[in-house]
Length: 205
Image (cartoon, helix red, strand yellow):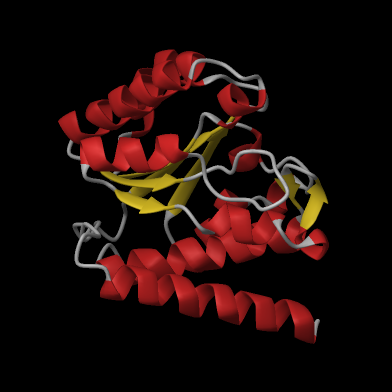
């Protein structure tokens, strides 16, 4: 338990410094008190490896006091996500989009230029509707995990807030994952706490 608290503290401190000190990190507009947050992605958003009540959207909802829609579909490719997103934006009218997608494109060795384009188009849809966006990077498989370069490319093209160290940090610790590519309950809890902290630092909450 002490180890997990220490890990959480270290991740929060390091990411706080990243957000607070980077002059290139976009600020987020403050969302309204009754704003809906849309967590959009694949199995990492759905919460595979833990119960749905322990997924990061469910934990973030409790932490933030905002309605957080879990719109994660395991196995979904970014091309499919791009087709699905407009209907969700219309239905839920969120003020914030947490986008964690294209992990399956990476795992299945799909064309990452296409995945990059799909993410850019998703963000454009959100911005067209005045929705704040946080992009969460997904690591490529390997011994030393780091987010795929496609996420930094997307962030540069769209000028959105990118969190590229969170999932690599979690999935590099065996005690925080349920399998090689998914966090466990504790991993998702850290993910939610970190997102909450970053949203505060960036001015959204």
